[in-house]
Amino acid sequence: MTAAPTDRMLIESAVPAFDAAITKHAAVAADLFTTFDATRTLDLLTVRTPVLAVSMWIRTLPARIMRRAAPPLPRLIVASGGLPGWVVLGEQAGREIALAAVGKFWQPIIEWREVPQSEFNSFAEPGWGKIVADFSVTPYGERSTLLTYECRTVTTDPASRRRFMRYWWVIRPFVGQIMQATVNRIKANAEGKT
Figure (cartoon, rainbow, N blue to C red):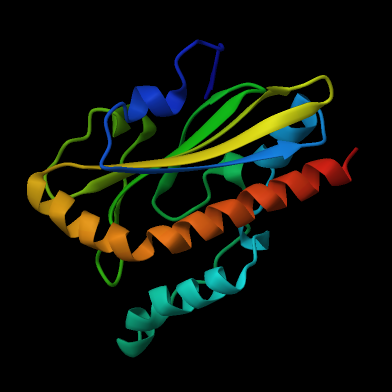
């Protein structure tokens, strides 16, 4: 879905109030088009950090203990919304792309809820959390771009909020490192094209 640019960002429309948020930035020595293209075409499986490797190992441990094999992941391209449980919430061409998901991510094995893009903003069934991952680019000086990656999470009821906030307290530092690694990968990809 492509929308005409507006003053209000997709993430602001989808999650105007939230329980938790984290934002990472990078100044990219590439033009706006190149940086946005590097964002849209990023294969999230190319983002590598020691923290990510450990966190993914820990995250899949309950499934392995329960002898549930996780299906192999295909390429996870940002613009395709190819993540399990995630949809492309919207795109403002050349400016912003937002992905969204509904789930119970505070559980040992995440339970994802398939919610169509058109119903995400209004979804309010108790017991769930909603996440928006938003990538945006803005001009930064004459030849550079400011890349921003922001994630916002909101829960649908007080009990879910309490569970999520305990989980968030533990994982927030790891999420921040993974998001920074993602921004760094996009920056490297964009600067490699110039």
